[in-house]
Every structure is written in structure tokens, then in C-alpha cells.
Image 1 (cartoon, one colour):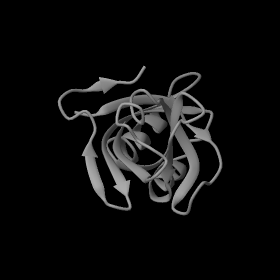
Image 2 (tube, one colour; image 1 turned 90 degrees about the horizontal axis):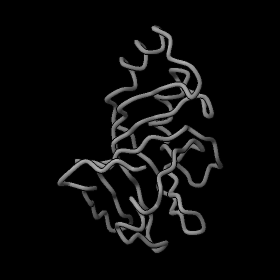
Image 3 (tube, rainbow, N blue to C red; image 1 turned 180 degrees about the vertical axis):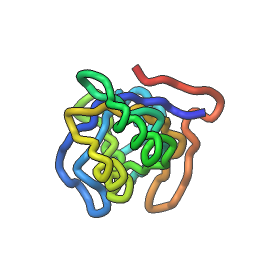
Length: 140
């Protein structure tokens, strides 16, 4: 059972090697605050893309078919930036995950994504935490 997040794809800054500047956000009460995360470690989150939609209008039949073939159901990985000064944690797609979205023409500011986040990886120790293992939690 995962944390389900839906947000507009945005473009920020490239914050570290291996992470793209593209990200989605989630209210930090569902992730960093709930799991007691601190700035003392580096965090990666793994999940799966559930849905892609346009912010305005609807997907064309071609878009829907391509997204279903190449994006929906794919595992993605995020670099987690904790929402210390804001109420939101930012999830920056790693380069490999972003390349999947980029190559099918998903643009920041035009599309929103619905993803389920199921695993938190804490570096440098490599500790793995299952996110909400007993039920689906939908971030609002």
C-alpha cells in the first residue's frame, strides 16, 4: 500500500548529480513530517506512475496510447528535497525516470502526474522504509 500523490509537473533547479530539474510536490505532512526525516541524510523515493493528464483539456487518443505504452505502470525514482521552509516536499525525478517522461513529450506546466510512492531509501546507510505498508494514503 503506497502514498498516492497527484501534482503538476514543474521545473526547478538541478540540485544534485543524478537528479533532473523536473519535480512534483507533496504536502510534507504525508512524507517528511510523518516519517521524521531530517537534513542529516539523503533520501530517494521509488514509486510507479498511475496516470498522466493534461492540466487544461484532455489527452488526445495518440497521447493516451503512448503514455499507456511507455509511462503508465513504470517505476520511477525521485530525489527528495525536504520542505523545511515550505509545507511541501519536492520530489525531483532522477535522470533515468525523467528521460521516460521527456521522450514521450510530457512538459512541465502542461501535464500532471498521479504516482504511488511505495519505498523510501535513506543514504548513506541504505535503510529502506515501506511507505504506508498497510493501506493506501491519498495526499490532499
